[in-house]
Length: 313
Image 1 (cartoon, rainbow, N blue to C red):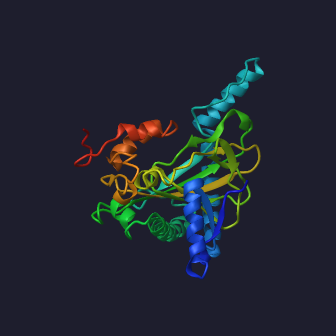
Image 2: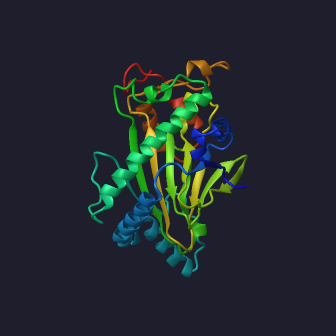
Image 3: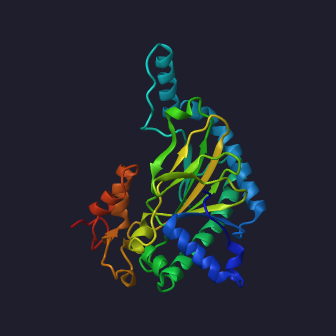
């Protein structure tokens, strides 16, 4: 079974109603779908591929000294000496750094920052279009989610980008590329490798490949959308498999609430009761950072509505 693919250009044409219905269905049934013809130019995507690949080449030696590589090498040495190899479940076979407007960016290659800033601007606009569609499909007032994420425009939403590579692994059966988890935030936009696979999403108890698709943007919903929709839209479990061959590129951008935002089910979606608590997003992140790879339901149970940022009942 293939992950759903949507031609986003049809949203502004006579097939708009059909596209809206598809997005609603995929948010409910999958929590994952791919967009083609999404409005971000192929020329820009090609530049992003180029600078991220060049940037990784400058980081490659550093990865060879990273914790997962050291643990793998030690285990293989012990295996050669007669020990039984045990799967490494506490590390990820991943080289990663993050980009935010106010943190330090790589200075090489020279065009990296300009290219990625342009890319992030385009992704942020796309994320806000997706939120508008979710609001329309859920029957919410326009900008309901955006207002919730920004404390009614008092703050900017958090928008971060995670630049990852998953290098070839000598024993991919012994280590995850990235452990299974759901994403904490709102809408996630992924520009994944168009040749090297490995991303999988969990549906109905089975893992399905998110097939590489040239120039597509993968969309998935995070825990905050699940809460705002009162469970109508689910954040999906996903993981990345380590691979013996190929160096997988993965650039994920996260459109999240500001840390002071109070998140909870929209009043119009509470016909079956309030299935999720109201809570401060910053409090949720404090829990998530400790329990990212655990079940999400206990995370919701540990956070409650706060009158102001950081307060707990």
